Length: 142
Length: 421
Image (cartoon, rainbow over all chains, first blue to last red):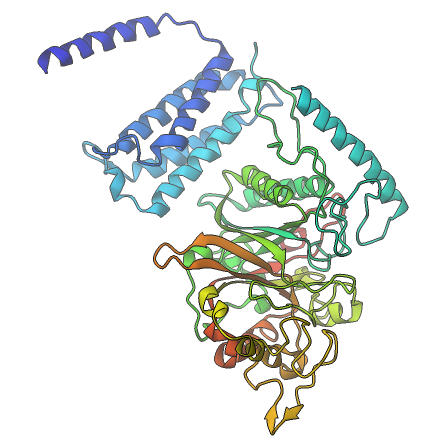
């Protein structure tokens, strides 16, 4: 397994280097932010991606972090008729706060320990961000 | 794209026709789009392509002749949403409902890099008598504290419903901060409206439960024929009719003498999901079925009468026994048994597949009843039914909700404005 792990680490570092040189349009970044949340809605909040380890919340939180980072990059460029960046930021903060309740010293509680009411609450907060976020790209410079 | 363009043209043509009909028929309760053929059942008065005015002193969807289809949504306001968020949503919902009910698309739908504002599945479909009726549940006022500064405005008539004998209520399918009754003659038009209102509400409210219904189980117009419920019986023969102004004033609309004043011209809605024990009912003898209901199954006439609308004689006896049994449903539900109190029933049949534990059909009546004061109308009537009705052998109330239905909005106003004034 050591050889496989070593190769994986090498590949990740190569990828890290390549990503730094990718040129992206603002619209692509905005849509990327939305798509990260779409993944959460479609297959992470359902607990199906980590069917055996149940560490779905780690994945989920990483998607949210990525989405928020991408959104922050384009937020200053949103045109006056576009969705409110302040409102979207506020909703990200509310989602962060609700996820923080499930943090443990080493990560997050296991997904199968959440009640349906708790997963529903997270799913609704994700949709609350993704809906206005989906309108951002149309209000960015080309 | 070509087919979509074609559909859009169809919809514009239809709207042109409506504008004309609207001008000609101003003031009528229902405006008919006369140029278009009916597409739904043509056995009664409902023109499925007609548009019902949204704005008015009362909300539409109460006195409106009952449509064929229901999509009912109960929403909870999400934690962290403020009074301003809720008011903003009510304004958005009002303007969306005003457009949807007239068969118009929502928002902007032609920006290639943006998701369309309207989800699109109603494009090309006529307004289909769509009505959207909004109400506030008890928890909206004081559930989880005074979230929106309206706790003191909760109507006394919106008291929590008591437990009734036989209730087996599922909390996940009951209650809700805001209730939205969507009715139309086309299931897709109804679902489209509720779906788009849900989308607009994301971030402020979330669906708690929803129920689709089919086959209206009551008539609310003298011109409508009486439909049958899933028990096969005519239901709602003696219902309150929306065009009976005196009875509507006395039994359905909140008058100016009632408090709180923000509810004047509104009403109260009680919702009950009533599961029928279909298998047991289906194997009961015709005679038992008729004695349980108190009507003849075929004609709909009360027992001992010949025609559906013959007056019911609750005093009639045959061989010393009451012709309409003492525990028959129509006897116990009759206004004469209930101090003259009526309910405007606007229910629909429902089916939600099979019960996984028993393979029994999960079906029944989604009961919707409008009234001036549930404390004097639904509650005492239901206590009497729950204690004595022969029908209880075949039904069970499995979910419950109630909503204060505010008055209608005028153009430029919004639903709920009187509550937040």
